Amino acid sequence: MRLLIAEADPAAAKLLARDLAELGHDCEIVGDGRAALAQATESRFDAILLECLLPFVDGVAVTALLRDRGIDLPIIMVSALDDLDQRLIALEAGADDYLVKPAAPAEIDARLRVILRRGASTRKSGVMWAGDIEVNEIKRSATRAGRAIKVQNIEFRILCELVRNANTVVTRQMLYETVWNYDSAPKTNVVESHMTRLRNHLTQPGERDPIATIRGAGYMLSDRD
View (cartoon, rainbow, N blue to C red):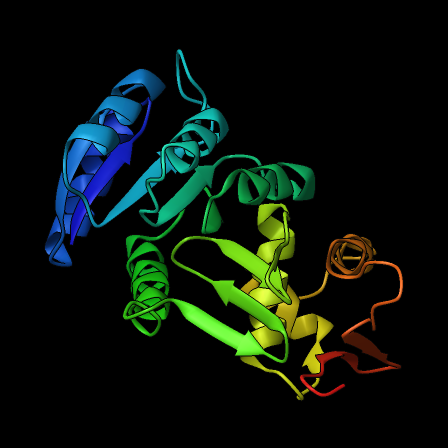
């Protein structure tokens, strides 16, 4: 894979690039957010490793700007901050994953391959349906009965998991792993909060709520009336 590494510490960037090169990756390094934006916009990469605290333009802003420009390259945010709020901010901005430093090159490699494999499975059209709900993972868009549904990145990722597993219970643990990339559930009601917002976006007065809460288990999106 051809990777763009945006890292403010030159020594750390060179070490990471060397280790990833040993795993078969071709890496280009930039040291600030402005350079990351320019390279990601003008050159061709398979994915971006983006430090959160970059000079001039921070990693979250870089991510949001790239997404606003329609650039859907996989982005892994790498940060020294092991903080739920920072993780949520990065994912809401459009990052595909969030790793805490020091991140082992082998784990970065594995996560990149998972993200790219997930994208390849829907690359032909990117479209999935469940009843009157349609999501397009490539365009990052969603509709219900032809009506555009405007949701933030986290809610969109939750919706994709529900549509992908329509008529099947999606547990909270599954959502923590696939949406937030947590191995274990944090002590927070973050899933419930985002699920409430997603329901509000999906359901207008008089419409059926398509998401059922399965007590003690999780959630299920039904494609049946």
